[in-house]
Image 1 (cartoon, rainbow, N blue to C red):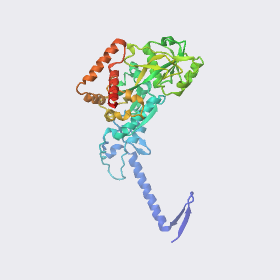
Image 2: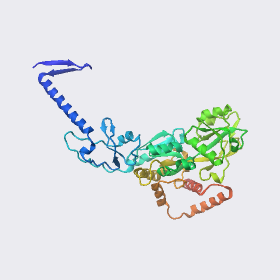
Image 3: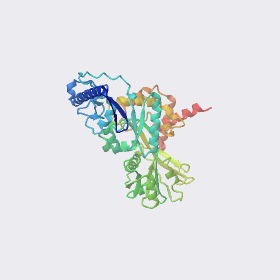
Image 4: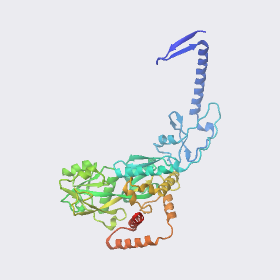
Length: 442
């Protein structure tokens, strides 16, 4: 039998014989026929194969969708069918239907039932907000103990950006500026029910840096003020603050370092920094003594959005005198669910995450995590819709009245009525801290 040696373009050698050639030719012809049949099946209408049953939590596409050469049949039930970004994201979760050539299609077997927390989730945090990014990472790490797999997405969390996130299925959860959400009544009216909050988180301090000649924040009306990066959480909080104060500055948008440089050069009359506690740029600023922190006086109009904060020279030695105390505000952040309208599939999935977060909350109170977790009152209410599962969990935990807590809250309420001090929610937090201190004592 004659043999031939053929060398491929890659340098590999193939030994071919007469009988082997014939068998190879037959195989190639068979593969071509098989491929043609498969191509015919792929492009054939789905109705030709019956009505396959989608796995639990999935719904059929109403138009042909192909990914990596395969037809994707289903997508998540919470996804809007008219979203342009849905195809790429759904293909990762959907299971394409595979049909052997020449074999009649059968309904797909139902996928095994899983808990909502079994699916990977994502948490959106503002890339310019280092505190929010840190909290998001610690949240994901804490829920890993219950088997929940999550990841952090750096993005934007202003009300405008969150409106887009709700409609585009960008993430499951977000850490967002609660003051900006509540303050933007008209802008959030059409989607707020689809973005319920799970819990209020710790507040981020608002600092207004200005020349020492500026002694009252109301003096900034009509003057150029740096608010932060446009469409970011910090800028949204700063804008909301001035709106609540009835002060209308000329807004400027830039990163903190650039804004402080403009302040030094006289191009800005003030800079607002939100959540800049760990900022080295702000810590190093003002060593020449030309600038200071402008106080933000507390008023009842601010109570629904902010918490009072007092800073000293220990916090900002370059901007606060040794014997000075500067009263300012803390802007609360919130953990919210995205595109989780009541009774939706997303709401059911997020409910499992909320339960894991609440029941394992003590994991976040360790010394290696951000100290602001210790300021969180899980039961704190807000003028914003709350995830039903979160509220149900809190309601179940409300047991018989606690006499000592009631007495402590009464004393705090009396103090608040007398001098504008903390609210009942703040009293709860102080009481918890007192009990922790007592239990840890000798």
